[in-house]
Image 1: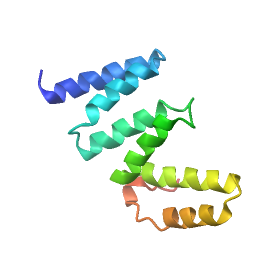
Image 2: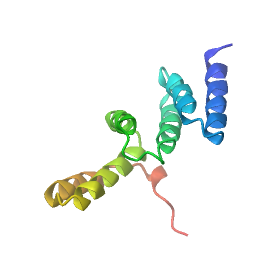
Image 3: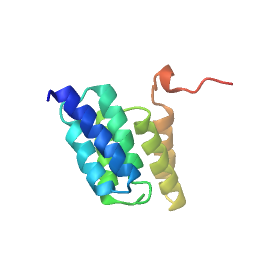
Image 4: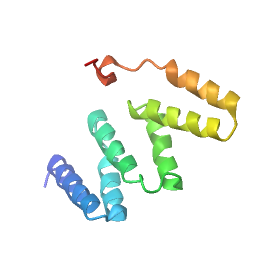
Length: 119
């Protein structure tokens, strides 16, 4: 099986694992797709990976994935991670650090395709 079909089948299998609440298996399958993936695929897979941690928001594994997303600059996830971290800093009373991070997120040049059009 060629690589494109392999990744398609692997992603579908991971999606089924998520539906069956087998997050560990799904995450392993998603991680297998990341090597050599193009930018569009990276965005989709990292989004699915982060969604699989909704029940574990303070997980060390989630933080590692978020750091990878930040390093790659994958939007819109990079900005959302920065906003979430700024909120956490604010909640913990670290107002200066929260403000600095929020300003950094606010100053990002996010492409128009990620901005929601007014209704």
